[in-house]
Length: 230
Ligand SMILES: Nc1ncnc2c1ncn2[C@@H]1O[C@H](COP(=O)(O)OP(=O)(O)OP(=O)(O)O)[C@@H](O)[C@H]1O
Image 1 (cartoon, helix red, strand yellow):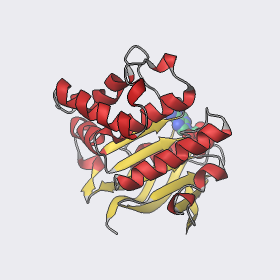
Image 2 (cartoon, protein in one colour):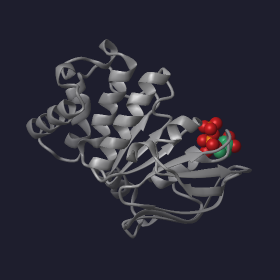
Image 3 (cartoon, helix red, strand yellow):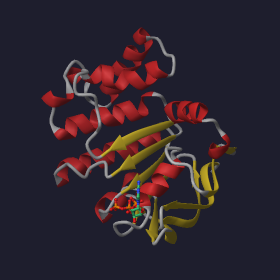
Image 4 (cartoon, protein in one colour):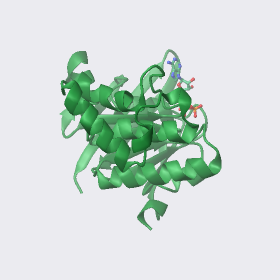
């Protein structure tokens, strides 16, 4: 497997609080990594550093060998839009836009024409069983449907990495289970790596690897017998 994304001894403080105290991780193309740990242990900070949203105080984050902190803000934003997809707990879809426009938006932001972006969005929504929903706004969907649109949006630009922060946290157990199945299967089929922060061991069990963070450090890192691979 090729290393896609890596941190090299990264640290990050917020004032006096050491959120990350020296984390080195490598994430291979196509693998799914669950990040777990107690509240305040540094999981979200790690996700934000990996995805270029935050720059670590020391150490490096590399994507395809390129040091993210060496990039100008504008170039890092571009890389995020082109290479990374994001799924959050509440979907963070734009409420005033129908599903297809929500999915097409990141593509248009990277220069794809509106027509091509909408066509790609319709295809992706169709693949995820949401073809009939494409003209609906997020407020007119169930939470599970809206999260599927969020997955379609995250996948639309064919990202190398999908970052997910408690993606099923707002869903009931059965819908969350379906959502995790869709997310892990879609990521695998698209050959995208998945990095997922969760408090829920059942959610983590969908991934192929579990990294446990404690006090801003990697406490354990092990392979799982992922449900997604069964
Ligand atoms: N923007 C910020 N300003 C100040 N302190 C912060 C900020 N972001 C995180 N922290 C602190 O850094 C530490 C790690 O936070 P982080 O959000 O990464 O933890 P977490 O493991 O994701 O927690 P949770 O599971 O509760 O979301 C915590 O002590 C937190 O209070």
